[in-house]
Image (tube, rainbow, N blue to C red; front, side, top):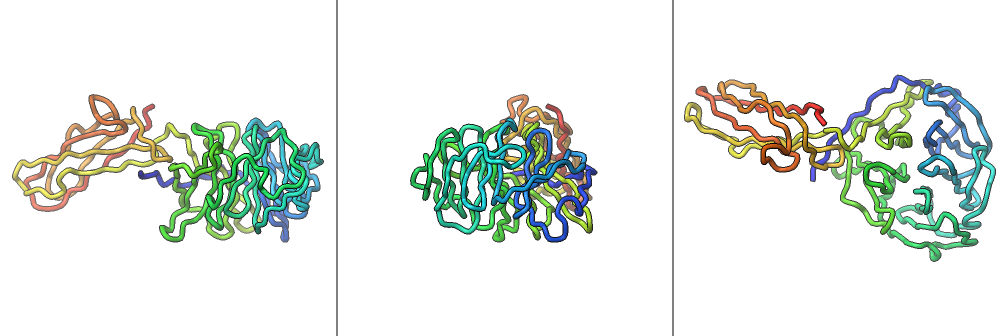
Length: 332
């Protein structure tokens, strides 16, 4: 399966670094609660921002991680003392869920889908009932345990309530030199074969990504530059085309022979799902004088396979090379 490579866009919103991080602060988590951006600063607490970059309230909290329910009504914290608890907006503990987590690890994250809480310990994930109380737990009381399902070094472990709900994480795969957004089934805690490729964000420091929970299609991150932190993001709307793979049935034809080659363009969204109803325009450039027709087709129509638009290339009379380009227009 192929996926679209997404490039970020700038929202033209600046978060001043003096208000966001200060010279010595470390950001552990950034999330969106449906109304505001919440930043967890290591050993300091919660800083709230509006989406226009305006700094709002600050509340002390010593925690390793925080997460928010998909509807924004509840917030949870994994405290420095390894307590998993529901907290209010000011960081006060409302109720304890696990008093003492004793699973061994060096990195921890939490996430919630509103019904269950998920604890990431290094490469493992544990699932707990949100309404239950566990006392002390070493992972054996978890409803489900996903062992070694997250690569070392992955970041931004969280719940995604989009077109297909799942847990997600992001990491840089050094083998392929690609930045991958991967999905985990929150039911079975197994990896899903669903990946998006993210392009051109800074590798160091690796940014904290967070969803706009109002639409669940915009994936934000903050890119620091000088004294500022600029809000950037990716549009992962599943109805939008992000990749077009063009193939030819016969890439070498004799000039002037009248031979043809079938051209197919597969249009996919950022997850690699094929999309129907997308208008594809075929154009030819080069030196042989070849042509292509029809010049426009809509994917999935007229008996064409799902997500596919087809055309035919007719070789020109001159020896040389022609390039066929398929361009996708957003027609839903």
